[in-house]
Each structure stands twice: as structure tokens, then as C-alpha cells.
Image 1 (cartoon, rainbow, N blue to C red):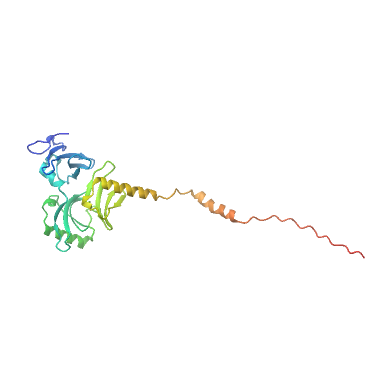
Image 2 (image 1 turned 45 degrees about the vertical axis):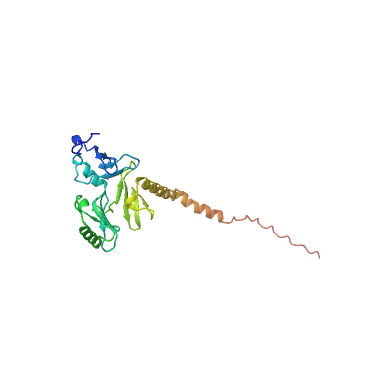
Length: 247
């Protein structure tokens, strides 16, 4: 790992890995790292450090502490929607930058807008998305943008908004969030616990292995044969003897 230049905050030798500085609010170190799914910044080094992936177009070697802290501050609340009174937030998901309001996602053309977009533009984008794509907006690839995402050795984990409420997703496993847990507050440990519980429940419902087709066909025949009453063997009746009448 290459350490950063203290004066500029940029990592040395353009490697993209290093310590960018210290977060003045928490006192924790901010590091730039290379992960399985690309470069990301990390706050602290505890059991569940906060992380944020670098958006497309951001060169890791040019990243400094200020920019890293901007990423780690996401999602950002822009303000309350004038009609619903619900918050509008902005962030960067797996499929790019977005604004979010009450389950409706609208894509932003540039990651820089995540830090600058105002309430009026956000409301317009949400209205356009709702009019053109229904309530549950989707990203450019057709998948629902992630509210929050985590990197894990078992595979990426995302928190998303669904038709029946927010859920966590890893691979083919989707686990609904409890009503009392807000999507933006989900931790990696909570996500892993929900996914493990859902995966175990799905596994317990698996049907017993099917019998071979030959055995399946033979079974009804054997059953029918068992039910068929046995035919009793009948002995031929002996010729009846006529009684002789004496004269």
C-alpha cells in the first residue's frame, strides 16, 4: 500500500491505494482501496467500516480527502418534496447517480450533480420519471438502483426499494426489511443476517427429491394390484349322489 502525499491528499505513484487523511468529524482515517468491484473509499477500519465506491470517471490517483469525504457523506438529503412532504435524497448506486423520492428513482447524467443538485431540479426529474416510467424508477440497465451497497467476500449486497417495500439483495436471495428498519440505516451485519435467514427459510422449503419416472409409474400399478381382491380357488363340486328308493 502506498501512502498519500500529506500536502495534496493524493496517493503517491498513482496506485490508487493509500491513506488519504483523517476525517475531522470522527477522527477516523480515510483510505482509498482497490476491491473486487473497483476502487472505493473507506472510513475507519472497524467491523463495519463505512464504504463508498468511486463513480465512473473518477480517477483513483487524483482523489483527495475532501472528495473522499463527499462520497462517504452520501446519501445526501436535498429537501422535502413540496407535495408529499417526504424527503428527496441523492446518491450513487451500482448503476450510477440518482435522486430518490418515495420509491421513485431518477437518474442523474453526471456524478458531480449528486453534490450540487437542488430541490427544484430534483422535483422535476422525479416528476418526469414518474410520468414516463411509473412509480418505481429503474436504472439504465433495467435494474432498480441501489439505495445502499456493500462489498462482501460472498458477493455484493444491495439495499433496494421494491414494489412491496425495501429489501436487501445478494445474488438470487431477496430479503424484505423489517418495517422499523430504514433502508439507509441498514448495516452490513444486518444485511447479512437477513440474507442468511431468508436463504435458510428458502432451503427448508425445498421439496424432497423426485423419484425416477420408472418408479413413479410402477408405484400406482403396485398399489392397484394390492387393492385388487384375490380370487379364491373353487373346487369342482362332486356329483350329487341320488338316494335310491327301495321298492
